[in-house]
Image (cartoon, rainbow, N blue to C red):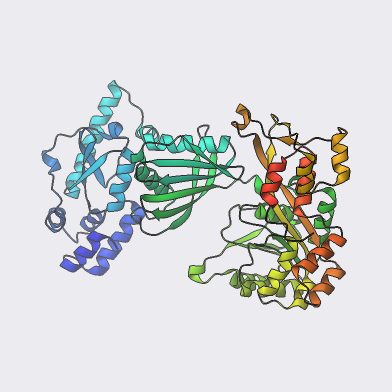
Length: 552
């Protein structure tokens, strides 16, 4: 309920039910509460204007005695029945409003115009009459001296142009996220490109509030709420008119709201399994597992390692008219035709486990669980896998062998895990070398310590292959890298691994058996990419440093 509505109810000027009805209608019609109350003849226009003036202390302006002047094009605003700009002095705009207590509207006006707004109250009937005079006078001005339309003026507002340019640069450079970070005396903009944050040219410090307000308006978030985090989605537009879907997260910090925009690239959802970086042998193993009628296929790795892309590549291979596929995600980032997707909402009780149980009653063939993060979700997923469904999901573990132990830690019985898990994929993303790469003459001792075999080093010395490292050019913006590719550890759960689990074997036991089964480690997969000239040894070492808990 708005500030004005609460004050009116306390005053007794109108019945509470009528005020609530009028407020709802004002929101639906994008009018004002005073206008709806006057339209319903519940309160006279001068009475409610006087009430706002005396209760809240806003100055009152008599528009009937004010010379109309069409300011809309000058202040980059579209006409609106809730307000009228009446005078502009420097960076201060006096705004006649039906309800100047509407803080969200005042904040939006401040953002749209880039000016300080000085709200005053006016009689809503005078507001409508003034708007009519403005319209007629503006038509006369435009006939003799055409101006840009009000919509064009709004689009050309400095903050709007800045955000559009920021998004255009992010898309051009292949960024996955845009960070807007307020500090005491500065405002920093950073893009995450190929997994690394890169600082970009920042706007003036006083843009921080206007940027936050604009993004919250576009995302339909509460513009007045600055004390709590908020999440939402919006659609942005680049300089060339391309529409881009974005996910927004706001966080109150010491010097303002930090905002992160995640760019939702629908192309990622359309990748096929051969495109994500698997070797041919790994690809065959994964295809065989996902085409089983039941069981679990798990993808593991840290946040940002490409797990969701791998899962969607699997779903794309399985998405056929004769198959019922359901996903439960937090949140659904990329809609896919032919797949039933559900956003979990813990606030309403729609958890992973609750959604899974509901889907189990809807005749599914394949279930994708965004993440197994608790015992209830793990148990429900295992039950689905044991009752004739294929379950795809992710966990946060460092390697494929550690995933089996993690499932046991979540309380699943070892016989259940051994009998249901078909295959585990551990993965990381490494940056691709740009075409400006240069040869890396790293010493053989370093390469041996990294994991290259004596035979491979001999082949390198004889010129059969070469390592490369980053250099830098305008095409890659001097980073030496352009794009990313996955490195994978694909571990089918063999009968030998099942026996180790049933015998309560450790992660080390599982890792040693996986090696005997012919499962290459993440490090080995990365070294193969380096030998192929796709990435650098530096990238491989950085991304696999903490994954070598296989103890082999």
